[in-house]
Image (tube, rainbow, N blue to C red; front, side):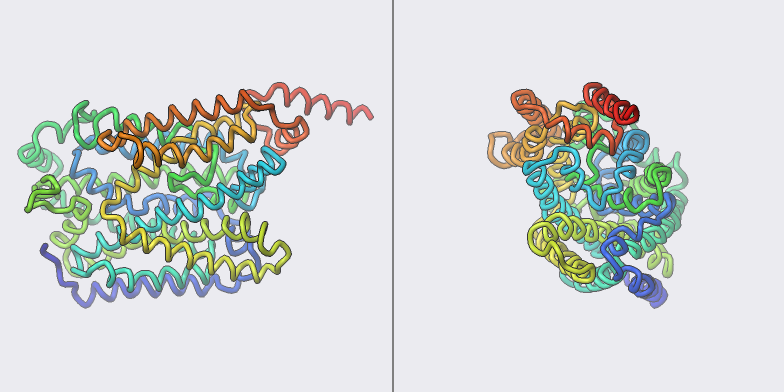
Amino acid sequence: MQTTQLEQIDWLVIGSYFVLLLAIGLYYRRFAGRSLEDFFLAGRRNSGWANGLSYAAAMMNADVAPAYSGFAVATGVFVCWFYLSRFGIALFIGAMLFAVFWRRLNLFTTPEFYELRFGGLASRIIRTWVALKSSLLAMVAWTGTGLLAIYKISEPVLGTDKTTTLLVVIPVVLAYVMVSGFSGVVTTASIQTLIMFVGSAMLCGIVLFEMGGPATLATKLQDVVGDTALQGIPPADHTILPIAAALAWMIGTSIGYGGDTAPLGGAMEGQYLFSSKNTREASKMYIVAEVALFVLLLLVTLPSLGAVVEWPELRLPIDDPSHIDREKAYGLLMSKFLPPGMLGLLFVTMLASVMSTIGSNLTFGAQVLVNDVYRCYVRPQASQRHYVWVGRFAIALILALAIVVAYRVELIFDVAAFMVAAASAEMPANWAQWWWWRFNRWGRISASLGGIVIPALVWFVLPTASWAWWDKTYLVIAVNTGVWIWVTLLTPADSPEVLERFYRAARPLGAWRPVRDLAEGTVEKETCQ
């Protein structure tokens, strides 16, 4: 594969970016080291704008260049269904229905919610399980795909192998995250989002100009691929993204969204919500992130259609000798169309998109691992300084496990499809725990365990290997939802004291009338006394 030799000015831009990250880390070093809340929640003083831009960068992750551009290559214009459903409906639900309630609870981590909501020993089990699942499964998987994405960006541009790429990038990420904590992550990610806007718009404009404009690009794309590449709605028989898959992705990532802020699907918005100044800033975070994501994804996927015109081999089957990995399409565009200096800037842009997510993943995973596992079971009464250092060790642990994932996985979308299906399996239960008073601790346990066990059975054990990923997703959602509803109805409701305590703290919407009547009656009685 052809690679581009970077000029001195490109290396200067890349080096300046790394120096900037380290400088930000050192700036926040003293503040981050004061306490767990300062290290992991930035002192709860972040604005919706800062958190929104940072969260947009974090949500881009590996999806931004390798996975999304590769998906655009395989589909065409209707790739918009993939990110419209993923980042359109879901974030809107989070902003309108859940942000205020989460911030009102004033928790330190998402798993703490389960002790407040369900109470008793069972809630401790749920809290511990969610913490372990989030930190050592979800964050490891998504950080691993992020590292893989950095390699898929670097290889077409620099010609470096995976090991060399990781040896350069990992020390920088580890240094600034460990030193600065969440304050540094938010600040660097906000700056990285602005860099992504500039860099992505730059390549988009150059590619469209070289192709003769959007209309000419559409004509050339139609000549290479056919009429399907310009369709607005996914064809029913498309091998990569038929309409059934688009709907599965939309349902799987939207139904239940917001009810949990530490899902397997990769979002770590709990930190962003709890670190916001107030409930208004928490809601604003979602809106800012949604707008930023739409613009960024458009700027990434539009020029990726030009990669199909330049390299038709991207669409060949994987067993074809001329096949090119489609997730390297964006790197190929960078190496072909960008002049010296601009190539270095856009390379930094792609690094920024992935490194911001890795930073968010590491701090979030370490936060729940320290607060909801180590602090609960190993050292309940240690100093704040001790916990901060354990958090730094947890960051290193999660990153080490993610490196294993980066070497074991070849296609980013394979991980994404399984993780989204696993998250989707329990997401309807995430709404139930907020909107249905009868949903109890046993239903929550069965939903959480089923969210792992059922997808694993469908993907790796049952004779469903030949099924499309979207059919598997529909199956695991249906089966797991049926299981937790059945378990909930067969077991007794949680105690009135626990339900009333949660209702008073959160004031949730939905079917809470029996608990609401109890709480309001108690308030009236206390007032009369």
